Length: 365
Image (spheres, rainbow, N blue to C red):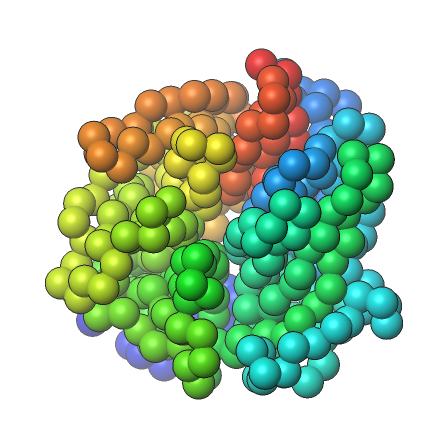
């Protein structure tokens, strides 16, 4: 236990309270009727807490998660700047594969579906597998098959099953290897809280489940201060995970149990999600030091600040070989759009997700 930490029962109580606040179905902290552009950003409003974004390969569509009960998945048409709720559990959207995914017999309830991290891996010319971290009704990774046809037709998805998280563990981000092995990051394992990783304690970890395995298991040596965003190497020889408490990305070799090869600090921001965007490994997050919010994140009365004060944001590309970052885009604080957690480029347009706001942002470069 870090020096000065609250007693364990009190810490657990605070952890439960924080989780309840974070995952509340109440309106997000940064909801606003004003959807006008601000600070060079335009918005698609009504997309509650779009924590993660992924482009559907070969299309002009994005899938956006919704980190709030019932927010679920959204299909975003980037050409016409509109979105719709995507998974509604219609009969034609449910085609379970109980051999590969035996953990769940029913799909997530759309009224509860609370989608966080996303991973989308192409499996064919017009098909892909979508993995979704879910908190609605169960702690799980939901598995969907995505199909896209011609340029005019919207992609479709089919629920295939789920992989349950270990009891007491809450997933954050998800990634996979080509052989079907699934990785999930956990920000705070049971008995730890966000304040702990802000103090530098190792609270999280990466859990792995190979095809045919009965459960997820912790990869020894992956425990970091707040394991957050997660992505696998393009050659499947390793993976990358954000250590949120360190404001850095840790690089791991696949199969290693001795800790990270390197830890690369992010330049002036708190990386949240990290994903491949073409051949670039992109991370995004809020500025580490925001003068209008009193500077860096503080621990106040023994509890980490929940960062409700709007912060500016940055997007940067990580070069895993050189172990360096290069800033690609940045912006000033916006009162109606806080908690930047994901970024991707589509053509000349930058898209931004948020774990706090009621909108997806975009800007032309």
